Image (cartoon, rainbow over all chains, first blue to last red; front, side):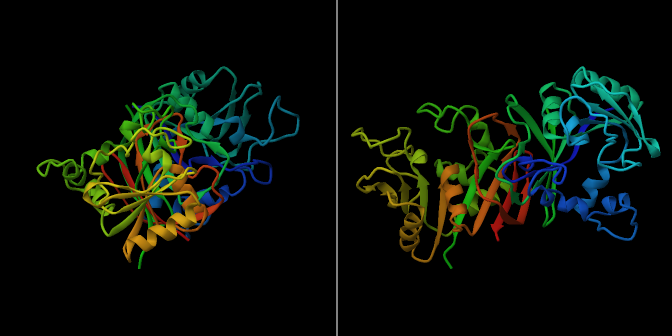
Length: 213
Length: 213
């Protein structure tokens, strides 16, 4: 059965999913590069970068690989797709990932501002959804055709999915750093009970997998 | 060698160490009772409550028991000791724990308001320290006489210890709940790198042990 999953979402020990002062130079905010150090060391990431020979196996690789298994569509927030805000300027921006993004399936970008779909190389098409998270999920689930839908982030989209009761699984990764500011995961969420269904760790990160109940 | 350790400090998945609206009825704030559910299930806690027959072994018990091993003194924040704020009223308040608190060693309470030491049954004496965290630690370390000093909380004291570079170890326990507000651990801390040195989990909680570097 198709499920909606937050995968590979890394937070700092003080609960931030992105650092302060996000910009074109620092898309994840200041200091946040260290958040994803664990992911960059995995075989899955190195393969995405085109190098089959690098990257390690182990608990980090297990969670990284799982993040791309059986994914038929993605949901992203506008801030994950572009550094600017407001109506889309005519600047040819096609996301952070070059001509062939690493999705290879339909990607639904939640935004307040309409934009025509954007077909990229390698099977990725960006669709821009302006009528809310429930609509984005309905469209993504249909496009996924029985496979899962992965929530790519950021923190605001993951929180909206949780609040709407849509999430089936949340894989969180707690990096041993403090950011001291930035974008917090699940900020302002209602009281919610989650079940810790799996955990493991390396020296770089703790992996915690939850199911909302 | 004597070390300064945060032990058994539980945070919600959204990073709160206590819930909103702390009061006499809700000393840990609303919803925060669920934070420490894992601890109440341990043999260590049940023994503290006087029942040798209850409580389970396992990863939760391992971390709970360790929290009381080799502890020669404690440091607490004022809010861990009393529900009121400001100058001490003449109300006979002697802490939340009755005539025989579960410390059995000297306890140093950080406060802005002087108060005479308070000797309790069973070896616990509360000392009230008004000249800051470094002084509290110096006094606690001397009183501990070679044993460790445990930081009992709350979040503000643990953050002050981290900021002052005093901490040797932080045992965090991540409970699978969202509090949506309250007192955040390490709020406003500077960028700090921590080393994840140990982890385990039960269905109730994830145990993560860090060493500041």
